[in-house]
Image (cartoon, rainbow, N blue to C red; front, top):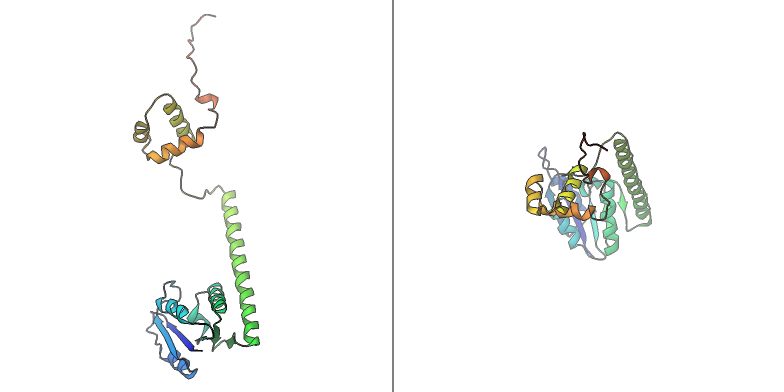
Length: 205
């Protein structure tokens, strides 16, 4: 069994690791991983190495929760990974210790909060999306071709126009032309796109 510490300070404001390192030393940490990186940054090489280093029976110690995770959800993911490996977790300031019954209860509460946050965020995103759709906002990449252009491409290709000429005329790639033709292959051609013989206005019946 090893007691492993992790410490982090932001790159801003000239923060020092000294206080955290001293607290971890008092906890008897056998090994400490530390780094200076923003709390919102996903790339934390020392944290990644720390989580890879710990083994079953070890305990990971941090001074504060925000030193370890970017959000409640991120914290939940980390602790779940530690639990699966049989690694305990201890946070000094928030008094969380998953090696005890009380600590596991506290973590259960945090897990519930993380789940709530995730569901609430998803619900708000969906409500915003539906509201935007109702106002006429279209999501996704803009269409390279209008519906009329797609029908024109189909009609011209069926009349013998080569793919290379269509690519040049509509300024799109070959895959776009092929994809357009494939999507329209089984659809009936609208009447307005079917060639009709020209009528002569002075023609006698």
